[in-house]
Image 1 (spheres, rainbow, N blue to C red):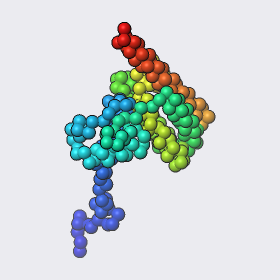
Image 2 (cartoon, rainbow, N blue to C red):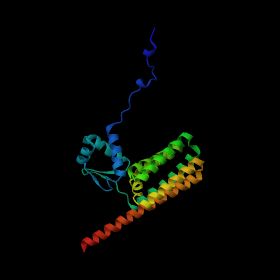
Image 3 (cartoon, helix red, strand yellow):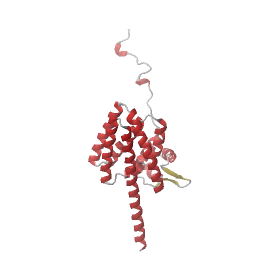
Image 4 (cartoon, rainbow, N blue to C red):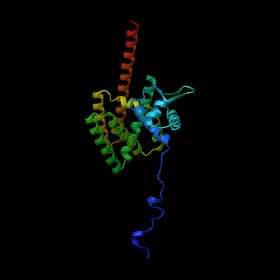
Length: 245
């Protein structure tokens, strides 16, 4: 007779399931996206392969494979025989991307308010409270990672794969801009208040209100980004004029 403590695991056992391992170049691509989002790899910056290999402790092969992934996402530009650089958006690009993103966020919110589950609402609430704590600490990288997860989770609650695919494609291109929109403390504080309004609308299941808050949120982000870009352009112009004086 077989002893009870020697029971053989069945085919559905966790031990029978292979451990998923991600290709190294995907891990490298994730890290590069973070560096681009947080501005450590700035728009227009040339990507030095030797330096990045040392920093990420990888060889050139996975790094170059990661470059191909990011180029397909339009986060970097590949230049034949001249390496790669971080993509830089024009003012017109910024206006168009945020215009589309506002509509995608709004539709996501309207659908999510009707389709989210109680468990999803609790998940978003938990992320919101963690985000508030990061805001209190003025930890912008941690705040932004939580902020991004909230927006992405709302999008997933809409349960529309076509919307999700389009959302991800556009959102990837403006992550650095959304991050930078919080550099101004007053605008960052206002964004936190808007997030509280989002949670309240989601709790009520008020799709129209959540859509309106999300669309306004993205319009304010766009305005903050354009204001910063205009300030940089003005500073560069004055700097160039001073250099010629």
